[in-house]
Image (cartoon, rainbow, N blue to C red; front, side, top):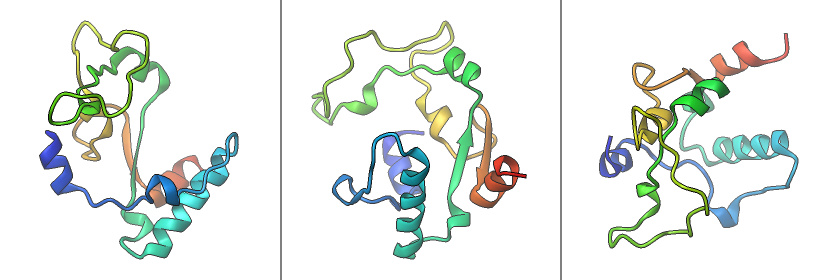
Length: 124
């Protein structure tokens, strides 16, 4: 998936950075505020929201990024890169799309809609 097809395939439902309600160390509440924002905007049902869950060990072994998604059309950094080398594996230098694609047939881990996620991971 290239950046242009990704842009045409997805509709942004998240707030801009300025609109975000964020409190350090309150992850669960930050997620709640994000879901509240999406629901209040009415751009989609929360059940249309998809989440990819990837085991940490798989993520560490398989994820690779050459950081090309962080450069603009002229090759300039959108934000300064981290000081450490790009993450790569013996199989890939760039597979970010395999981790962010919401097609369950692609990539690693499992893709859930919000109801499935809550049912699978929620308190029993």
